[in-house]
Image: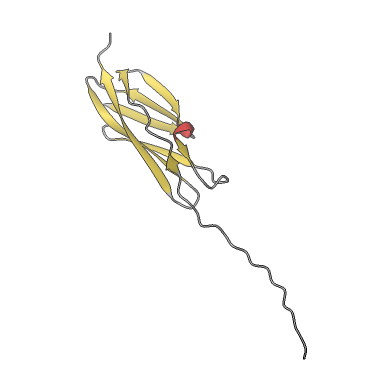
Length: 111
């Protein structure tokens, strides 16, 4: 009776897991013309530690609150008072999975 052996290597790639929100980004108020800058990395995480997240932002009403992303830095600017807008920040991983957080920014009169 002869015995043969076969050697092989098995590679198991872990599935990509989506990023998640670390909680709620707190609401804020700004005066018309005032800008606030926030680093959003504190509000999201990815369980796949090597994933680098890409952030985008959207204002539901750009005539009230304008938004701009520069890497993980969100700048929102009050445009017209009084009023408010829902701001959505989305974190997307390299596999296209994402998480979003929504909060309200109110624009108030000066003073």
